[in-house]
Image (cartoon, rainbow, N blue to C red; front, side, top):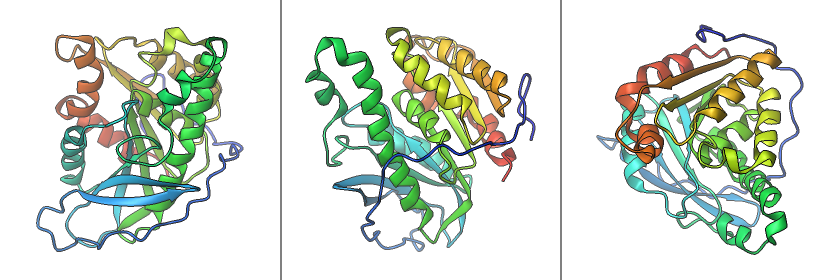
Length: 282
């Protein structure tokens, strides 16, 4: 697998125990193989006591298709507009794309992380933020379990990506042996990195234990490219397969270099990401 300059290949080592997550699956909506455009399909799935929501883009046909799970950011109401652009782009290239919405977001049951954080004493906020991220990761693990059971999904070609807070969720997922083949971290922790040594330590530990190759990518005008550089170096030191690319400026503002780059920059990063996913070893 070609992973670019500085990349290494190494054995996966011991798997990290999964977070507690026992999905109780809600029947999926009808498989829309006859839809000409294979439009976005809303679904529900469960993680323990919570009914969670998601959206799926599927190519026309029965499959099974390679599948990308894409984790949204920290917002309470992730925009369907970002899902539409990303979903259609990957769908047109033969991928199923699953956008799971974690607890408290986009109509999914459960507490929204920021509401929970606001209830903690100031002295506990830094550690509590990371604890809540780990708790939400159980929703991502449940999403992987759900999508693996869909008949149109090729479970041997299952990948994960995410932007910002979703990039953090992707890194936390990569340390678990849950059946994904590769992970793409778009700008994970670029806004929060400098605010939390606890978060830095948690993500460093996660990439050192990663069970899959990870691709770190950002635009140069993102809020902070330090997390990509540091986490990539941690994987290098740990002898884990990795890749990094800090792309030129995208747009004019830091936010355009952050979220818009992740969700609308396919013309810039698309072919490199596809090559990374398709080159990931089974």
